[in-house]
Length: 139
Image (cartoon, rainbow, N blue to C red; front, side):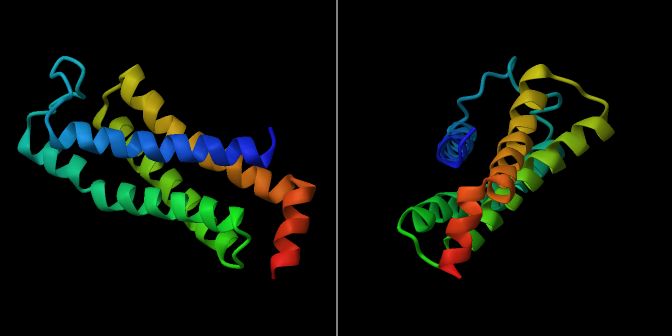
């Protein structure tokens, strides 16, 4: 996988993360498709506690991809912050569901993708010779 494909995957992931929050805000998630105890106010508060993290992850992801594309010297740093925040959002959710003892393919799968996509893109940044050359030339 080339870095360009990885950045597209990250943009799609971040966009879908924002679509999820729009769906939550307008109460568009069907109750039968929601996670366990979705209507519990404490679980709702837990879910909403992810909003600032997810928003920051998406903003940094979008900004990082843009800054790398225009060859801004801070682009790779901003992109790395976005990757880290996106990974952490997925990891925290999976950790909660594991501790809570609840397994749902939909919720585990979507949160696993929040971990897998940034890990792949970060791996491309580290192991892609062209990306390393580009990073070095920007410093």
